Image 1 (spheres, rainbow, N blue to C red):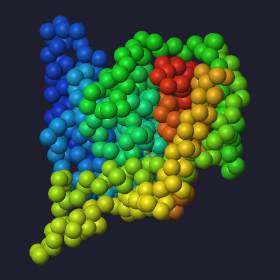
Image 2 (spheres, rainbow, N blue to C red):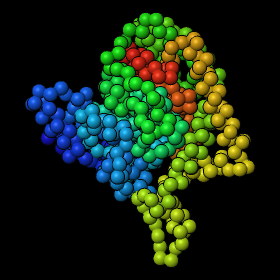
Image 3 (cartoon, rainbow, N blue to C red):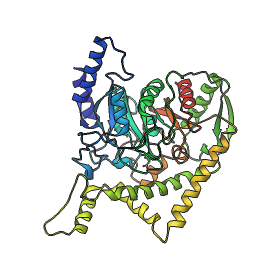
Image 4 (tube, helix red, strand yellow):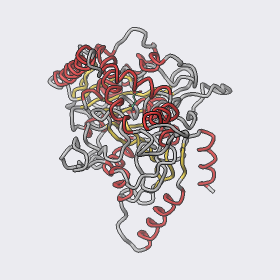
Length: 453
Ligand code: GLN
C-alpha cells in the first residue's frame, strides 16, 4: 500500500524515469531473511533508494535523461551502485535529471521536468524547480518517496537541488566515489555523492558509496573512514572561515540573513569564526563554463548512433549523415549549446585564449582554498543565491548559469562540500547552507553539517 502511494506520488512529480520495484523488494526480502536467520544486518539492509539515471545499472534502462540514450540497457553495473547493492540497499527506480547532468533546474530532461513538492505558501500553485541536475533525487527525497538517493555533482548538482528542497547532500573530495559506470559530463569535475534527509543518513550512504576503484584512474587510493561513527556536533577548536568574496552584489537580504544565522549556530557549537579571502572567486563561474563544456564536448563524441541507444538512419544515408541525424535528434538544446561552446574553446585558434586560460584560473582558485586552510578548517557560505525558482521562470541560459555561483569554486578545487537545510525564506521555501572542507576532510564537513541541523 505504501509502495502504491509512493508510486502515485512519484508520477505526480515526474521524479522517476524508470521504476524498479522488484529490485527494491528483493533487497527487502533479503533483509527479512537475514533478520530471521539472526545474521548481522548490512548497513543499508533493505533500504529502498533512488538511483540518479546517470549511473549505469545492469539490464535497467540508463538514459542520462537524453533521447540519444533512450532504450540503452547497460551490460554492466556502475561501481557506486554495485557497492550500494552490496551494502544491502535496493533500487526503487532511476531518477530524472537534467540531460547529461547539464542544468540547474531539471528542465533540460528529455523526459519532462521534475516538479518540486514545495510551494510558495498556502494556495500558491506555481510549480517550482527541484534544482538540478539531481532534481529527481531531491524531489523524491523531499516528498518522502525514498529515504536517500544518489546524486552526482560537477558544479553543484548535489548541493543546489538539496538546498532547493530542504534536504542534505554532500559532494565528497574528487576521487572519493568512483566515476566508473557514471555517464561522463566533465570528467575532471564529476563526483558522485549521496542525498538524504539528514547528515547522518548522508554519512551512512557515503560510507557505502566511497572507496578505491582501479577502474577509475582518478579514484583516491585511501581507506574509507567511519564517518557515521565519527559524527560529532561539537565544533570546539574548529575555525570556520567566512569568505568575503561570497558577499556578492545582488544577493537577496534573506540569503545574507541565512548566512548570519548559520554563523551564529556554528558559534553556538563552539567554532571560532574568522574572515578569509578567496580572491579569485569571481572568475570561478566563467572558468567552469569553459572547462565543463570543453570536457563535455569530448565526452559526448561517443554518442554517434552506432554504439548506444538511438539511431536515425534514412534510406540511402551515408555514415556521416547518420551521425548528424542521430545527434540532431538525440541531443537537447542545452547539450548542443555546451557541445558548441566546448568545441569552440578547444578549437586551434581559441584554445590558448579560453581553455588554457581557464585552466590557469582553476589553479588560482585551488590555491585560494589552499591559502585559506592556513587560517581555518572549514568554510561557510550560502549554497545558492536564491530559493527555488518557478519552472519556466529562468529562460536565459546565462541567468541559469549564475545560480551556480557559490557551488562551482569547490568543484574546480576538488574539495568536499555539503549543503544542509538552513531554514525557510519569507515565502516558506527552503534555503541551504554550504560547508566547504579541506581535501579528504568529509568528517569535518559532516560534523559542521550536524551542528547546523
Ligand atoms: N548547473 C551546473 C551545470 O549546468 C552544474 C551541473 C552539475 O553539477 N552536474 O553545469
